[in-house]
Length: 95
Length: 437
Image 1 (cartoon, rainbow over the protein chains, first blue to last red):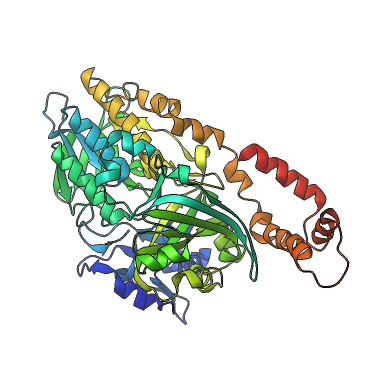
Image 2: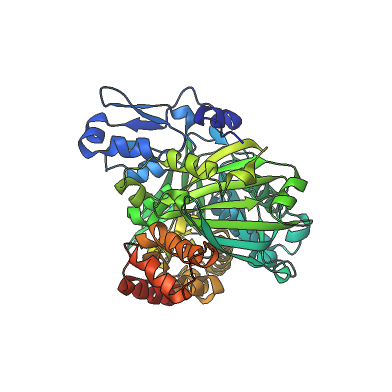
């Protein structure tokens, strides 16, 4: 079986996208100073985070699988991460 | 707000996973008014597990569980192995006794938890799906603060007791100081794909008949030496393939999680199991790995914490448990809350029986028995060296290359000499393993 790419994998999941509220926010200065930027990029199964050429971290919150690994590895203050609003985000059909 | 104000419910349960549903069900069966708040669109839609549920505990709560719950397969085959790049060494334990009575089943949580929530509704639990609890409502008491309810958006709900069953990240238990942010070596992240395959194909590939199931668990090259392991669990018409890696080791080694996962599913040990399948879902989940040392306070004035939210998971090296501990903690919490409501004392001391009940149970005793397991499982040699050493010993025994054979002991000494592991380390690891597992 050819393993699908990450975007292809995510396309198999059902998401209710919240257009109004983004549940993730990176503090670029702290993320850079503490190395948390690279750590959250590396631990995310959904590739929510991307390190841009200028070393800032961009966020694709719609892809989030809501595990919380990024919050665990990030230094205090580097990341604001909570769950999406009720009814939004990934909705597992298998689990 | 004081005790004279009538609360909206006697008990608010936050989170419709296994721990939350069992707590709500047990309390509602005793005639308590219970609301179960779930942030997913429907109960189960945010929930994910590797997939093996040791089911004797939940069968006591729901006698109809095996016949009526949406279960996948009954595990009769446990395959536990050390995986290298080109070899693997394993114990393949198959036993019909594991099916009669049933000991463990594979589950898909979106389906199972929806069933559990339906059972809750049948006994009168009010379910509020699609609602995220934003914070806990507290009041200053005479000596200490107490939890009096929760806030979700603009709405406030009040109850005598709030149950935090909101999973491993438990924001609400952290908010009131019932749990601290765990150190990174106590956390792992799990990634899982569900791959659909015809049931006959699964039965042929895993040597199963009927609703028999297999649980394959390996350590070593599956995570490319990062502390953790990989698994392949059989469902009825799909397999759950995934890995769990410790976050401190992943970060320290500078590895990318998805690279490890892609390596694992393409590994010659795993790929043949998945051949011809279609990936139908991709998910991940944080796993508490601290065992006993991760359990902090379980109760405060007006609130208890159950299941993953309480850090109740147990990796014994052979069995990976969490869902069965959630059931036991939920049953212990429900019994305690019911009695506390009877005595009109939902203070920390009124709820203290929860901890006693949990640690008097088999699950609580198991947490103590395996208290040293997390430290043992931090040994890097488990993931980097022992698989190769064992395979080299067996290669020496099986590879009849026209050289005269040596005694196995001599082959083993040579294999050890060619590895970075010393005899002293081997002996010390062996003793540590025997003591902690």
